[in-house]
Image (cartoon, rainbow, N blue to C red; front, side, top):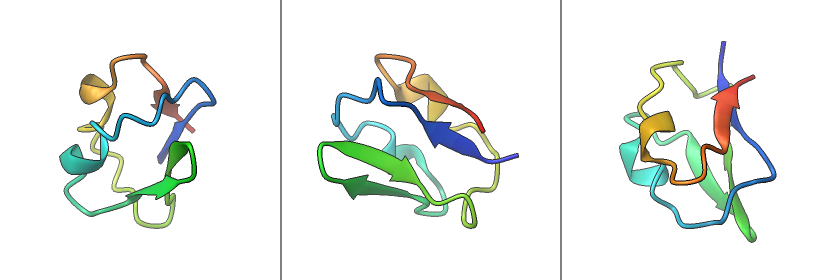
Length: 56
């Protein structure tokens, strides 16, 4: 199951560098995860300071 970024995202970008497959992209004021690229590793979740990344 892929992860998703909730509306709580503050757009800091800390998660983007943690994704080993580049599935996290900037989308305006927040970031999004491309579910088709996400490998469900969870590496991004620990880097989010506002816990905005959850399982989809």
